[in-house]
Length: 536
Image (cartoon, rainbow, N blue to C red; front, side):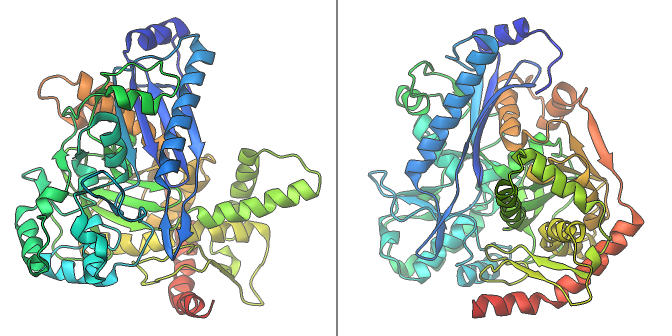
């Protein structure tokens, strides 16, 4: 973390609560970030976790949710104490963000009815297709409403007993505050949003209720969904029970203000200052998604493009892919095991840097190598089940640089397919793409690959490694500190990013040509990936 002031001012901010806290539940890590009055990250804590494949479904235990949230907050509190000699007992404002979409449903006693079904599950093809046709609006496989309707189509017994449904961020927020609310960006991954109303699309809600009316459920959809709030609105306070749940040390006082819980798409927009039309950002970690803030609604329905919103309800086209760095991480683990077996000591970060930088020495087209990073299915390419593959012809140039570049390219390939539809079919123009997430941690490498893949300049800020939790803290700070009538984009531009350092990489012709060659092989051989799912 970088801060040019002496620690006395930071200590003062912490002591009087002139801070904001963001906690984000990501796919492989739960992280908390505390920012000071200049919106600089001054402390953090993290907890690693993994989803599990149980009975054919990707899930997380809710017990692990709380173990992770408590652990990452405890680590942050310890970081504050060690760095500044202060016991953290208050923050000026706070917010929760998490993986979007999925299926979390509870009964009237707040009991979880079925294990959490995450965004990673691609089991809702029938529901997605029927609802898209009914609404005339793209409903992706992972959206909460698709999971609900698929459960209805499947005749699952629990559906009639649902009292409410929410997202992961909405669930944690509710436990800490007692409020069943959700930020509009996160809500847009549950059910279509009318941006003019900043609420669920009323006509589509009516159509859904009519669709399932013969089932004689005791509920209506509007009663199941959490109440929608936009950025800047207050979303409750930390309750006494919530304070004890979050901070097991008992130091944190109740009464801390909360902003609306948001999805990781919205925090990514805040963390990259991409909340105005013609701006876009890519969050690249376990999954990868691109958000393009639109100047106008899309002309047609595209299965490859989702419609979500910014945290202040502007329409956004989203290209979402389930798989990004997971296969890269798996290979890095293999190389780490080799280092250990060989008696070579190397840090995890150092090994990532070494392997990423090797990719820079590769042939622009990866020397004929081909990789599929599909740990799970991908709706964009109509792959139901993931089977990671590495392929090469006998005459391909097989070496470490080409191998690593093929891994980095594969992480972007499905995104590129959706991006082409956005730019070529819909004519959407982006002046720049901002990147954040683990894919960009090795300076310059991920940017160069993505600039080639998207044929667009890619910019990363110095705060990119903090990513979503920092973006969530910014939304919490906006809620508490904004001037009357001050829009989110103005707050970010004038109070957060006015002195930010950005690193822009322009696409190079040789890299763009190399990625095009890779994509020709990639799309042609998708039949092999489908066959692998049927055969293995």
